[in-house]
Amino acid sequence: MPGTSQVTAPTMWNAGKRTSRRKVIVRCLVAAIILSTSIFWKGSLHYGSILSIPLQDAQTQLSLYLYPLLEEHRPQCSPPTLHGNAGLHRFNPTIGAPQENYLVDPDGFLEPMQVAHDGFVQAIRSTRIERAYIRGTKGIVSSAGGKYLPTFIIFLRLLRRTGSRLPVELFVKDWIEYEPYICEVVLPPLNGKCVVLSEVFSGPDGAKPDLEHFQLKAFSILFSSFQDVIWMDSDCFFLYDPTNLLTSKPYTSAGLLTWPDFWSYTVSPTYYNISRQAIIPTKTRQSTEAGMFLISKKTHFLTLLLAAYYNYHASYYYTMISQGAPGEGDKDTFILAACALGEKFHTVSEKVVDLGHPAPDGGVLGAAMLHADPIEDYELTRQGRWRVRDESVAKAPRGYWVHAYNPKFNAGEDLFSKNTRNEDGHPGRAYTSKEETLKRLGYDAERAIWEETKTVTCTLEHAFESWKTKTGLCETVTQHWNAVFESPSTQLYTFTEG
Image (cartoon, rainbow, N blue to C red; front, top):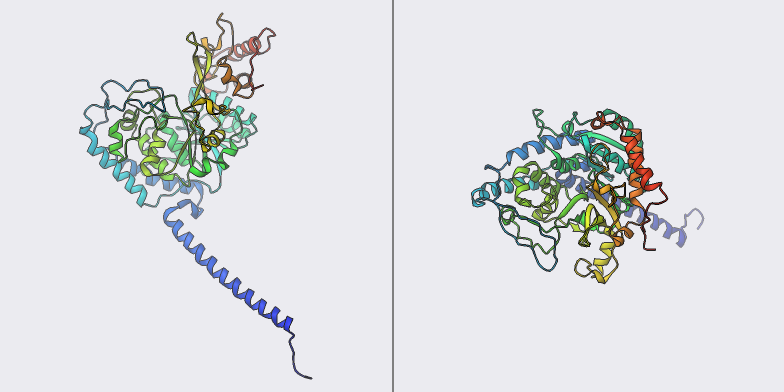
């Protein structure tokens, strides 16, 4: 009709559609506000790092909380002592090693240690503790100083040869171990930096915790800036770029990934009573080789705090966990902490193997330890193929990283011993056996090690504090390199499956 506004059916539908869309949008916005408020409220109670405060402030708050807590829950008794020791027991998945108590008078310290342990666990579960990391970051953390620093630089250069660009934070104990030239000139081009632990972890009155060697590991990880951490001991190196481990199973499904040692657990039954756990049968899994492991500070923050407690009170827990067996130190503290708190973890099942020279009995005179690719191992075990029980079920996973313990490739220490000489006493390789183990390397890794050893020794011969009194290091390493790797008469080895 004239003068009357008419709306066609399609126009009415479009108008209704716009009104409906507005209602949906408003509802979504309201829901988003409620959800984000809920997440923020929960996060402010339980997840300090979600508040995005500066890292340095988070480190300070963590330090001011953690140091008094560790002291408050110090066991009120003398540290345990041993009568004898647990000895050497190679891991056997079918026959468990003895689980005996070698502690003197365990009943005398069970209650005070249990009270202290209970108190610490209750405190970290119930109290908001600031998490010192930058959300979404991934990186490698290590600790080295003094005579361990040259080896760390060599193996960091090996890491860069794999193509890895992961940032690296090197923790040094204090300013005495801080070497300005290495930290300020050598490390930055390698995407590395030094962090002085005593600067980020101290008591409210400025007291400096007396931490040494193995004890530094848990605290270095806690105060590092990364959310997802690969720990790398200074004498360990990767054969391949480890970056994808942080975004792949088994790490992403567990949050804590470890590799095995040669040995069975030798944990005292008293520890399980103190931490209120069931005793873990020794045939369940190997003890831990903690030279490399991966951990998420987002999912396993409490595990790190309890591991820090064990390492802070090392005089109590190292003795109890190892009972005098090989490798006493931090090695099993992370897994045991996770178990005590009921947090997930994944241990590589493939056995560690020796690298070294042939032994008269057909074995290997060890110089290093070769560890398996965790992703390949995970795929096998996911299919029910456990080589740790029956090696015939599948081909061994490729080697992934090496713990080089003798030699550590430090030209200023005992580099040129029998392990770097042939049977006739002439310069030789450190890793010549076994043939099947060498093939798992995938390439001539030892040549790469010596190449970086030569480069570091000859360019930084006068840079490291521990080398200041040494002479002729570059010349000696170069002579060894020429004799072993530049000589046409050198024996050839196979490093692939061919």
